Amino acid sequence: MSLLSLGRRRPAAAPEPLTRTNISDADRSRPSVRISLGVGHVLVLAALIIAGLGPIVWLALAAVSPTQDLIRGPFSFFSSGVVQWENLGIAWERGRIGHYLTNTAILAAGSVVTTLLVSTTAAFVITVLRPRWGKVLSGAILATLFIPGIVSLVPLYLTVRELPVLGISLIDTWWAVWLPAGATAFNVLIISRFLEAIPADLYEAARIDGAGPLRILWSIVLPLARPILGVVGLLTVVASWKDYLWPLLVLPTPDNQPVSVALPRLADQTELSVQMAALFLSLVIPVALFLVFQRQFLRGASMAGGVKG
Image (cartoon, rainbow, N blue to C red; front, side, top):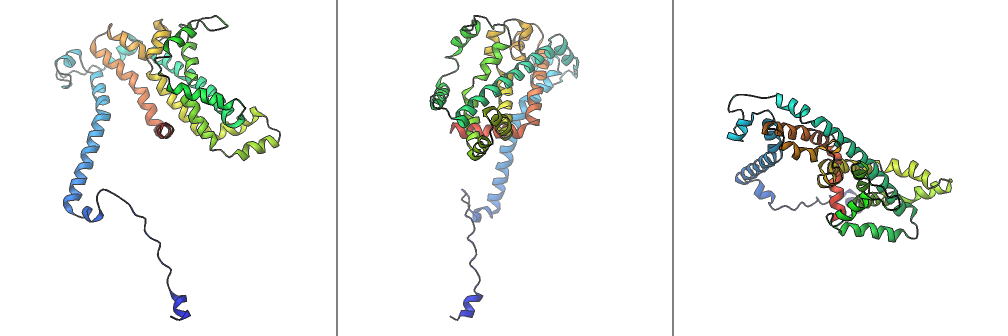
């Protein structure tokens, strides 16, 4: 073989990446396989839509249906031909859903603030400052993940009822919900894992320029950790919005309770159609939050699965 032919030889093509599936390309080309796969995909998609949107659509229809229609046929809506839009107004005014939703929003906002404050500073100390006792603190925080929440319920309640050293009671105050929400080991863990991915050279360069711990936290950590802080904030809002047992214990006064605690009590005071309207009004805001921040929710779910795995 001459040098000229060697020079004209074409470079070997890069091998195509192999994709392993349960069904080969030859089987996919068969009409029967393609039709069965298409039908299977449509059925699975329809089942997911019914399972996800079905209860919400049913609740929306039940919210404007008469009580008699709901009792006679829960799934035969408007059998009497009557649509009671006033159910929503009655639930808002007589059931004070607006007041309870405001309490829920205040509790969720305070929980977000305390969670971000405690979790961010704890993760900053463990990951960036790295004191000598940092491993002990990290191990103690991780150990709390193995303690079921119901086990710590009574000690936490006794602590809130009479704070150590101060000797004051936080019962029937929003602080009884805000402060325990900040001590969440899982949030500290995922923020710490995110901060570990930030190059340590940034911290060293800031220290060389004379920046202290607070300046590093404010100017470097918080701007770079904005994505994970948003995820933690959204997950905290969802957890606070649906929490029932703890607010029921520490907020005995009805005027201070969130909507999750007020709805069961409302069921004993109003008719069924108004109850459905109240449930629908309390569901609208979480669904709207998910639709607006669905990317952050999905990112938080993927991070949670990665950490737990």
